[in-house]
Image 1 (cartoon, rainbow, N blue to C red):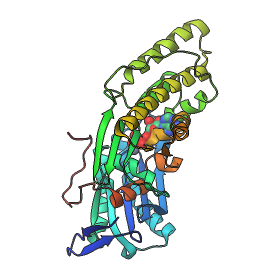
Image 2 (image 1 turned 90 degrees about the vertical axis):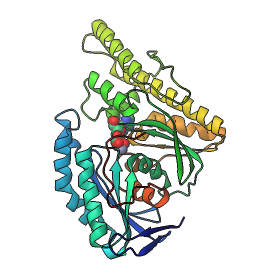
Image 3 (image 1 turned 180 degrees about the vertical axis):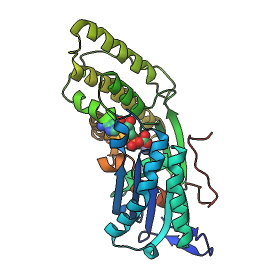
Length: 347
Ligand code: KG4
Ligand code: ZN
């Protein structure tokens, strides 16, 4: 992997190779993160300031509050990332930052910091797509190379991506309504779990019977998903059980049945994509890739001869190491200083 980039101020050429350090910043939602990664795979420092405590009291992320918290945290995480790595800006080959999709006020904070660092230190600037970054978490500490199928499951997105090469990623399927993480968070709220509900629902599910209640799988396009029907069905089930049991409903069984339905749906489509594309490698990415049952089911594909990879937990949820890795491997095509943040995937 050898990329050539131009510095912002003097237009000098910088070659990115296995020895190069990329510093990256991530601020698309409720984590302010900065990391330094060498050669796209070796994490030198990884700093994450989470805002979960702040948003917990509102039951979700309030964009304006999130943007202000990013402003407070951004310099702290940058300083910490340099200190932990024992490096200075002179050692950095390029500065990368998340351009979108995400909350625009939040993205602006991180992206402006990235552009400023690149300008002041006269280094290349690399703008990164947040979704490509999640996929790239799979390059960390591995020797993974395309082609492979990526299942991206986060709070805002659910996609099956055909990663044909470093420069050719095609979204072949996605959700037509709720993202998986969104469905987890909504169902969690429905049963009274605090924000963020996903991990908590996962925990309860591990204690329950996945076959206690049958929940519906949506019938949509070949590689597409729909989770809003499942959410409604779960809500109806909860209502019915409350009539029967009062407030003492069998939470573990409800969570386990919901988790079974979601994970089965995801795995079926992933398997189908692998068969259609004829690949032998599959990766999972995004915050929901931290889910115990989804991980277990994906890794079961190893028994069928597939090579499976999932990032370790801290690289599944939002972090900046994955952004640095994406800047190194993928052609993110946002390398212009004039690039603007965006909230949703275009096109
Ligand atoms: O990728 P991410 O950190 O943020 C973006 O959406 O970009 O993903 C956050 C989502 C939240 O919806 C959270 O509830 C969910 O990932 N999540 C989980 C688990 N851990 C995080 N959902 C289910 N099971 C988990 N273990
Ligand atoms: Zn994310």
